[in-house]
Amino acid sequence: VGKNLYLNSLNGWVPSLVECDFSQPDPKPKVLWSNVGIHDAVTPPVIWDGCIYGFYIDSRKDASDIGAKPGEQNYSFRCSELKTGKLLWKEHGFHLGLSITAADGLLFVHDYQRLTLVEASASGYTQKGRVENLHALPNTGRNMHRGLLDWSMPVISSGRLFVRTPIEIICYDIKDSKAE
Image (cartoon, rainbow, N blue to C red; front, top):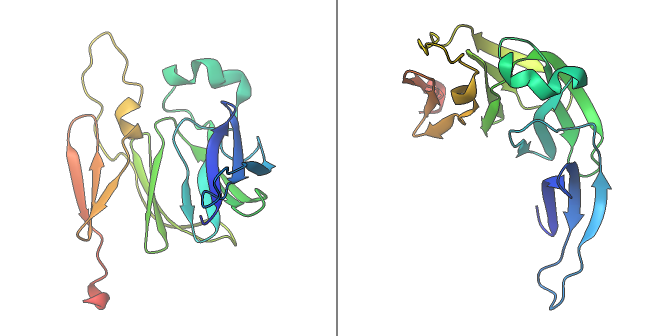
């Protein structure tokens, strides 16, 4: 973002925006802001149109064993202003196994067995669609499925959205038919 570099975990855990002019022979990084309350989930956030979209662990007491509870809604989806780090809005109710990708002002959010389409907007959370029970749970015997493959980032290519699940890859045609 110009001379600015967003770091999801400065010093190992604090989301920050750092300014560093690499055109200078000896660039001196300067932290513009740090904010522990915006995005701290394992998956990287998405930067779109001056905003950062990502996830936050809402239930701190459950964070240590959250991997064993993929169906629980312990995360909020958040939007923060990139320039200042100010939290603009948050929406609760997301599950472990989080990933997100963006295209054309839309955010494709993949969490445990679910795909949600969200408008990328600083003014508030607007859900445009949702697919529940996106996939069946694999028969894993003694090992419980923990939503780990739900962390796979959805990929967009040639007007199609590809979503990896534990048992298949699902393809959605997302191109705007009016734009053709």
